[in-house]
Length: 318
Image (cartoon, rainbow, N blue to C red):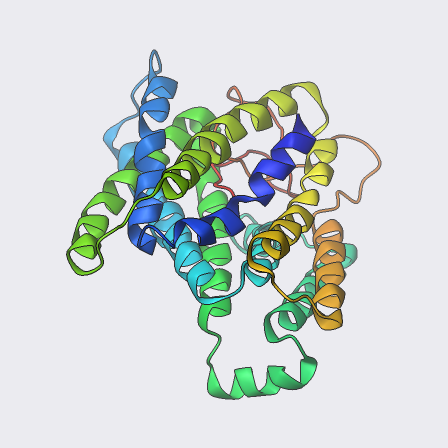
C-alpha cells in the first residue's frame, strides 16, 4: 500500500500541470480542497470542538500551508517543467529539519547538515539545468516557477512545524481537518475572483484530475499513510516515500516529453541523497520522529518522519 501511495503522490505534480490546461491555477487548487472538504467534515464527527484560540490558530495554519503553500505550488508548476517541480517539491522534509531546529530547538547532526547541503546543490542543478546558469539566476533573481516551488516548500514546511503545538493538544486528524477546511474557505473567494478574469474550460480529463487530487492524493492518500504508520516503523514508511520524485519525473517525461539531461539526473541524485541524510534518525533504537501529515494518529502517538519533531502536523502532497 505504501508503494501504491508513492505512485499516487508522485503523480500529483505532473497531473496538476495537466489539470492547468482546463482550470486556472487558483481555481484548480480550490476545487481540490472543496471536493475533499466533505470528507474532512466527516473526520471531525464525534470529536471535541477546540476552543476559539485553537480554531483561530488552525485558520492561520490553513492559510499558510494550503492557500500560500499549495497556491505557490500550482503557480510554480504552471511556470516550470513538471520534472523540475517534482524534484524541488522533494525539499519539504529538508526545510522541516531546518525549521524544526530553529523553532523547536532540535539539534541538527553533522549527517543532516551534509544532507541539507547536498539537497540544495541538487535543486540548484535541477532548476538551472547547468551549473553555469546558476550565477545568472542569482544575479538577476529571475527564478520564476522554480522560485515559487521553493516558496511552496518553505510554506508547507512551516505549516508542519508550526502545527506541532496544536497536535500535542489535539489529534493530528483534528488539526488536519480544521486546517484543510480553513484553507478551502480561503481559496473559494480567490477562485471566484480569478474566474472573472480567466474562465475555466473543464473537460473529462480536467475533472478526472481534480478527482484524483482530491480523492486519491488528499483523502485516500492520508488514510493509507496513517494506517501504515499504525503498523510499521515510521522510518520504513518514510524511506518508501523517497520513490515519489522518481515516479513524478517518470510521469512527467511520459506526459509532457520533458527532456532530462545529465545535469538534471545528477541534481536528482543529490536531492535524494540529501533527503535521506537530512531526515536520517542517526540513532540505533526507536523510530524516526517527524512532523505530522494531514490526517491523523491518535493523540500521543509518537510517529513521524523528521528527526527531532515528536508529532505529525497535517501535510499535503508535494
